[in-house]
Each structure stands twice: as C-alpha cells, then as structure tokens.
Amino acid sequence: MARSVKTAVIGAGPGGLVAARELRREGHEVTVFEKSTRVGGTWVYDPSTDSDRVAVHGSLYRSLRTNLPRQLMGFLDYPFPGPSESFVDPRAFPAHEEVLAFLEGFGRDFGVLEMVRFGAEVVRVWLARDGGEWSVEWRNDDGSVAEERFEAVVVANGHYSVPRIADIPGIDKWRGEQIHSHNYRIPEPFRDQVVVLIGMSASSFDISREISKVAKEVHITSRAKDTVVGKLDKHDNIWQHKMVKCVHEDCEVEFDDGASLHADCIFYCTGYEYHFPFLETNEFISIEDNRVGPLYKHVFPPAVAPWLSFVGIPNKASFFMTLELQSKWIAQVLSGKVTLSSQETLMASIEAYYQELEHVGQPKHHTHSLHPNEIEYLNWLASEVSLPSIEEWKIQMYHAVIESFKSGIDGFRDDWDTEYWTGKSISAFSKGAR
Ligand code: FAD
Image 1 (cartoon, rainbow, N blue to C red):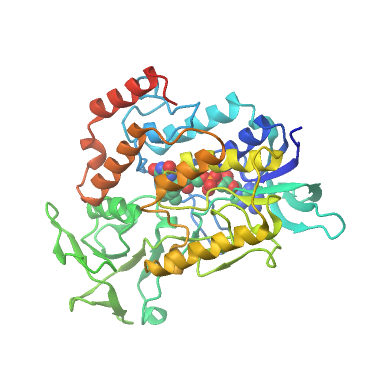
Image 2 (cartoon, rainbow, N blue to C red):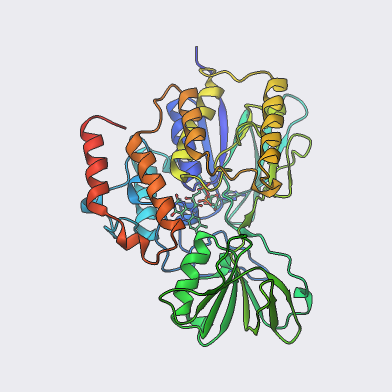
C-alpha cells in the first residue's frame, strides 16, 4: 500500500505550489509554509529593494517579460493560457503579471491555497534526535514562534534573492554607485549616467537595453573568450568589453581589452547564491562555491533521502517543467511507488557527475547549470515517474528560443513567429499530446 507522509513544503512560489499539488495527489499530508502573504514567489513584483534592515525576496524589474514563450511556462495538465485566453497580456512572451495570475489560478484550482500557512517564515529545520522526524520552527507575522514535527521536508525557497557579486580588484576603494540586478526595478535612476554592467546573462541583456534609453553610456563586460569588443550594432550608446581588470578610487574602470573610462555605476548581473539559512543539516548537505551538495540529481541528499528534498535547484533550465517533474518524483519516492538506490549508489552517482563536470571544465559554481543537458535531465525525471519523454514540439521550441537569445538580436521576443509556434502546440494538443 502507498505510504502517506506528513510533509512540510517551504515556500509557495511555483516550486512549492506544484510540489504541494503532487504530494497531495500522491496521498501525502501537506503543509506549505510561506513567509509572505501570497503565492507566486519570484513572480510577485516587489517595488521595494534590499535595505540594511530588510532583504526582499523578489528580483523582478517592472518591465520584465518572460524569457520563455508562454507554452513553456505551463504544467503538464494545466497549460499556460494561450494568447486568446490570456489574463492580462496575450503576447508570446508575456509580462510578469500574466505569470502571477496563472500561478494564483493554479493554486486555487488545485486547492493548494488551503494548504498554505501565510506569513509563516521557516527559521529552523533540524532532524529531531529521538525518532528521525524533522522539527520545523517558524515565525508568524505577529512575531510568535511555533514548532511542529514532520516526517519529510521539501525545500522550495527559491534561489534568486541573494546576490552573487563579482570580485573586482580595487572595488573596496570605489566611490561610485554599485547595484546588483536583484535591486533593479526601473531605469530612471540611471539617467545621464555611465554604467558598467558586469555579466552577459538574460538580465544583463534586458537591463542594458532598458537603461540605455536614459543613460549616457552603457558598457557591458563579459568573461567569454570570443567577446566581440566595440559598439553594439543599432545602438548609439552600448559598448561591449572584455572583463573589468580593475577599478580606481576616482571611478576609473580599466578593462582587459585595454580600454578605460570614468563610470558612475558598477552594475552586477552576476547571478545569485543558494541560501538555506533555516537548515541545520550541515552534516548531510552544505554549500561550497555555490554547489549544494551532495545532492542526487539535484534533489535528494543521500544521507537523509527521501525525507529531505529540494525543488528548483537546477538553473539554465526550463523552470516550470523541471519543478513539476522533480515534484512528481519526490511525491512518488515518498509514497514508495518509486524506489531510490542505496545511499552508496546515490553517492557514487553524484561523484561520477562531479568528475564529469571536471572533465568538461565546468566550474564548481556551475554544478547546477543544466545547459546543454536540460532535456536529458527532464527525460530522466519523466522516465522515473513513468511519463513519456518531453514532446518534440516543446524541445524544438526550447531550442529555438535559446538560439534567438544567443543571437543577441534585440526584440527577439517580438520577432518570435507566434503563429507558427502556436500552430505547432495546438496541433500537438489536438493529437492528445500532454
Ligand atoms: P520562488 O519563485 O523564488 O519562490 C520561493 C518562495 O519561497 C517565495 O514565495 C518566498 O517568499 C518563499 N520563502 C523563501 N524562504 C522562506 C522561508 N524561510 N519560509 C517560508 N517561505 C519562504 N523562470 C521561467 O520559467 N521563465 C522566465 O522567464 C523567468 N524569468 C526570470 C527572471 C528573473 C529576473 C528571475 C529572478 C527569475 C526568473 N525565472 C524565470 C526563474 C524563476 O525564479 C522561476 O520561474 C520560479 O519562480 C522558481 O520558483 P521557486 O518556487 O523555486 O522559487
């Protein structure tokens, strides 16, 4: 008979929502802890930014549109609404409000909202000495603290809130401004400024174009060996450079390509750190150079599997598909429908994965970056839970969007062949595809 497990889920972003749905479907008893007052996580736009006293969760800028087309932002049996059924924005790559409305609908339609304790910030999770259960301690909005025991904990606290900062020689003496994309909301503060933007991520792409409309100059730096140095085509005030070599007290910035200039602001688009301030589990799992480990398939720490698990650790991935398949796997392993190998076998698999990363020269801090093996990972998860492989149209669409992004063409979202791709997905649905 299937095992029903009393499970705590930490976070009610997309990961926590879909984890809760899958756990409940599998017959588990679920409580979701959410520190804010609503579901949606990252997709709740928060105009405030970090201050000395408060760290905000959200990292969305006001103009943000998805970087995946809407068909890739849904769940298997709960697709993202097509343009004609859209909530607020029918575009192929909609604004963030559309994603939030979708997630709120998901929470409502699957009864997940009733499982959530809002205003409940988990502050401590530890393995109780007496019986192998987890103690979860949380702080309510009114400041009161409570504790409850659970058999299993699923961590879905999100990984886009704690800025990762590049180490730049001379930065301790820098007198200009510094900002991380986590705290960027609108372009106006950069009016007439010279901004040096570090990193070539999706955020850097969008933000550089947006602030260039008000800034005097925008200089993007990249670590990539093949960086083409010079002014960007079709832009009067955006340049590309090699890495920053060093910065000086008087706000001079020197680049590895020999150029130098005076800047007002260093803008970090350098990604985020994993952060689990509530977990007292260092003997089972820890973070080293942004590697959360050991984690079997980015989900289970072998020493305490399956009683502790993580959703949403992989990056450079198709997020919602990953969250959903990981959640199905966790739910079925907990119920006993799917079995995990021995602790030793799981550890050996993790070691083999680390060696493979080393072999291909992938730095440790990119341990959880799936590219270019995103689809392989999704298919592996799908096969674990007896689902067919990812449909061909989704794979094609995913690769097409990565290519558009890599080509660096401004406006790739609006150049997207909406009719062609909508036709592909509709014809797949009418043939009964998931
Ligand atoms: P989150 O959405 O971050 O949710 C985590 C939740 O946990 C939050 O509600 C938080 O309040 C709660 N929480 C945290 N700590 C605690 C605690 N101690 N106790 C209780 N609750 C807690 N993905 C896409 O698929 N497409 C995109 O276009 C896309 N664009 C992005 C753009 C930006 C700028 C960023 C930052 C991310 C983007 N992503 C995108 C990735 C996005 O993070 C994922 O889509 C998704 O939100 C991850 O879901 P999650 O549930 O893992 O984390």
